[in-house]
Every structure is written in structure tokens, then in C-alpha cells.
Length: 493
Ligand code: UN1
Image (cartoon, rainbow, N blue to C red):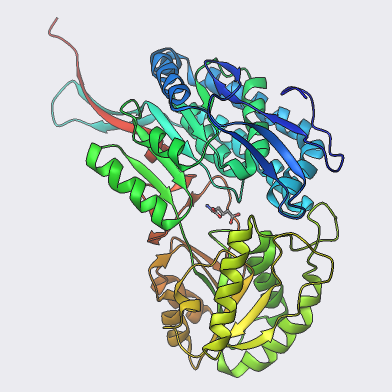
């Protein structure tokens, strides 16, 4: 086992030796031992190593602080070139690493290959920002003066990434941080530590200088230490709403900018004139890919009453494609949830909803022989938007259904609740579509496409308890830079 060799995917073998990347090199953690295991086959260890100690986190932060000036003064095209090389490395490793990522995260192997390709695309998109305009120039009311608006790096950025996109999400945080001249200390979740290692290897292979990006493994105690350390100039976080808002409160008290991507309770609204076949396919994909573990997943469905029965019949028939099983099997659509806790939480929420009167529209029991953290996909029709199934994020393969008699009611059901991330509208009538766009209370509206998915070159994020701070991805410069306005006059000759 070395950290540079490609992993083996033989069953029942530890396949990745997990180290931290501190002090510009791979380093054995000085914290407790840990493993990442397969949620499909929990006895199967994927990665093994040690968490970082708090002292190692401090070393990573002081390295990042030392590198601030040299990295900031490196031309942006040179910084970008490292990302382009890292993208090539990821492309080269995708076929070998996708099964490892599937085993560790529970995400089906085809989705893992897709995510690795997407991560490379994200690195390239941000690298190409080197060619974008660097700032603005304004006219001055004074003769002989120009006013320039310059974008400067923020400094040392703490990156806290989630389990559900182990490579793509840290890529879309770290890539813009680096290209705009920041240095980074990154903590991924222990459950997907081996998959996270791949991105660190890519950045190393891309030649990012020692100490500019560090990787520290650990639980919340290490994350808390990192985000509250005095050397951190900005924090970017993706994860649960309670954790994100708590980190944001601490950051606000210290005047540290925060970008937090948190929960979602995203609705698909199917109006009377929709293409029902296309809507059924999009709802299945939005609700059940990644086992519903996306902040953008479709977890609410609002059906116009006139097509509701037909839609639910067609949805029930189409559920046959949602095959539950081993995420390394190409035929699997729905792998396990990330942990026993996650599975138990979802199963309890389903049985409580049923005991409150929810009607199971479709929901076959799990196939026999699955010993992991699997959860059968389920569609439940409920009576009221006050039901917890309508208001609380579950992060599992559970779709709650309500009916509405008109488009305005449908939209208000979709808008209800504390989140505001993504919304899908299925309709043909242009008036209904325009009205839905105008009234949508979300950061992203999809007309005739699923709630999940995001292109790297456009803003990503939401309203309410879904997001705090500037948008990610295509709007990344707003977070990863600060603006300096320069009043520029020549001295008298
Ligand atoms: C997607 O919909 O493909 O944590 C991306 C999440 C989001 C990313 C979703 N921040 O699920």
C-alpha cells in the first residue's frame, strides 16, 4: 500500500492507505485511527489511516499562511496550469478509481465515473478563468483619472466538503480558491476519505506547490478547530443546515466570510399540459439517483389534480428501473445510504409518515440478501404541506406527493418551507412557465428538467436555509476574492 499506487479493488482488502497532506507532503496522521468502509458491505474496509491532530491542522494553516504571498504573486495563468494538469490526471485515473469511489460512497459506479469527469471539467473551467477579464474600469469625474476595480485573493480558505460528491464538490471549491490566488486547508468527511485522496493526488500531480493546499482528515472536532482557527480568512462549507448555520455564526462573530451550501427540499411541479413521460423520467432521476442524497434531489412532487392519477400510475410502472443493489454493479440504479444512522433515520421517518396516514403510492420491499445500509425507494402521498415529510430534509430515496387544483396553488406548495434551492416545473403553456419563473422562491429553476444537476459555468446556490453567502461555481469569484477600488491619477509632472 502506498499513496501513489493505483488502488486495488479486490474484495475484503484495505485498498487505500489514508494519509494527511501536511507540510507539503503526505504525512501519517497523529490523531486517532480510522477506516472508511463500504456502506453496501460494511465489513469491507476501503481506506485506513489516522486522523490529523490539531497540531497538524495548525501546521497546515501556517504553511498556507506562508504561501499566501508567493502564491498570490504567481501569475494567474501559472496557477491555472496546475489545475489543467490535475484535470488530465483525474481523467487518466477515472476508470480505475470509479469502483473505489462506488465502494466507499455507495454511489453507483456509473454516477462515480460521471462525477470524476465532471470534476475534471470543473478544474478546467476554473483554470480558464485566467483568460477572463480581471476587473472593471470606471470613468472618473476628475480629469486625468481612472477608477479601477481589482479582485484580490481573500487569503487562507478552509474547505469543508460533504460525503455525497466526494470529488466534484471539493473540486468546485478548491479550484476557484486556487486560481484566484488563495491557499487552502481542506477537510473531507472520513466516510469518503479515500475518494478525497484522489483529488489531493491530482492536485499534487498537477504540481501545486507544497503547502498551497493541505488535506486533513478528521471528524467534527478537527473541522471545528480548522474553521475557528485565527489564520483562516474565509470558510466554504457544504453539508447539513445545522452545521452550516453554526459555522456561519462563528464566522460572523470573527468577521470571516462564509459560503455555506446546506439543505434542500426541492419540488417538481407537474402541470396539466406537461409531457408526462418526460416528467416521470426526470422525477425518478431527480428523486432516486445517489439514493436521494443530493441537496438538489427531488423530494417533493406537486401534481395538478387533472393528471395526478395518471402520473402516479406511470411513475409506479417506471419505478422498475430503480434497481437497488451493489453500487459496483453497472446495473444498479440505487445504492445504499452512507451510514446505518442515515438509513435508520429515513426508515423511521417513512414509518412515522405512514402512521400519520401517508399513502404508499409505490414502495416495494428491499430485495433479499442486501446487508448494507440500503433503503428501498418510496413514493408517499400525504394530506398537508404541514406534514414533516413536506418540510424536513431527509436525504434519502423518499418522495412526498401533494395535489393542487391550479398552477398558483402548486407553486405555493413548492415554495413553502424554510429551504429555497432548486425547483423543476413541467409544463408547456408559456404563460404558466413565465409565471412560475417569476414566483419561484429558489436559486435555481429547471423548466422541463430535473431539480438536480449543475453546470460549472453558472451560479449555483439557493435562498433561505439552503445557502449563505455568494453563489458557487460560475459566480465563484464573488466569494474567493475581495474587491479593491483604485483611484488612479498620475503625479503632477
Ligand atoms: C448536483 O445536483 O449535481 O451537496 C450537485 C449537494 C449540492 C450539489 C448538487 N451542493 O448535493
